[in-house]
Length: 254
Image 1 (spheres, rainbow, N blue to C red):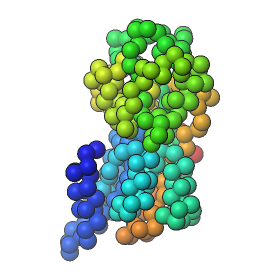
Image 2 (image 1 turned 120 degrees about the vertical axis):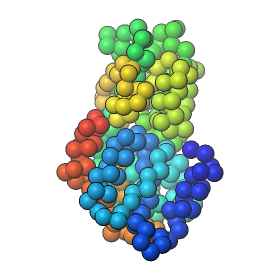
Image 3 (image 1 turned 90 degrees about the horizontal axis):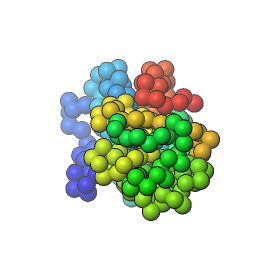
Image 4 (image 1 turned 90 degrees about the vertical axis):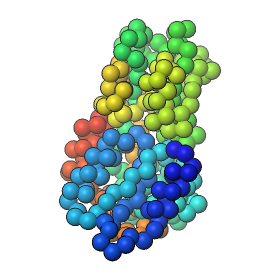
């Protein structure tokens, strides 16, 4: 996400709505939510006449930094619990406004023509000399990147592949590396593999025992312009209709 367009969007979201314009909820959503978040937004808008959900997708850690610096988001849908917990600890949100909405799942993704035997060898197959680059999200700011690194370590292959890792600023950029040939394999959220270029690849589930549980939490922020509306959207995400959408994109449900 480039600085110029992102800043312009934040300024637009911060501006008061003119009479007759829809009420907008500004949502900072983890990049792994991309397809699911867009469907969740459409579902909520269909139930609320005159409401618009404004989505900004990116790395959860970068969003927390922006929120600390006053970014005018109303709701933060993170890829983990840690970043929302930090927001609460720093007085940027209330604990009563935080809830876990999904359990993320990590997969290894390969191009359709790849001959790597992940099914038999597991993640150890990534140490094959033919795998020159492996895309993951940056563990410093992306929870799925931390999970990917943990899985590689637990599988005993991290030292063999660490110099081949290419880091995306978010899982979306890591996916772009994989689908454009800039990487030969990738460790990504299952949720991104249901549509677009990733849908044509090979997907290998990474055992949940190899990395910490990926509990994804959302929190209404203290600066929310309409806290009740932001709470309503979070309740929709975690409610019956939202859970059905999340399950469609491969998420586990809390």
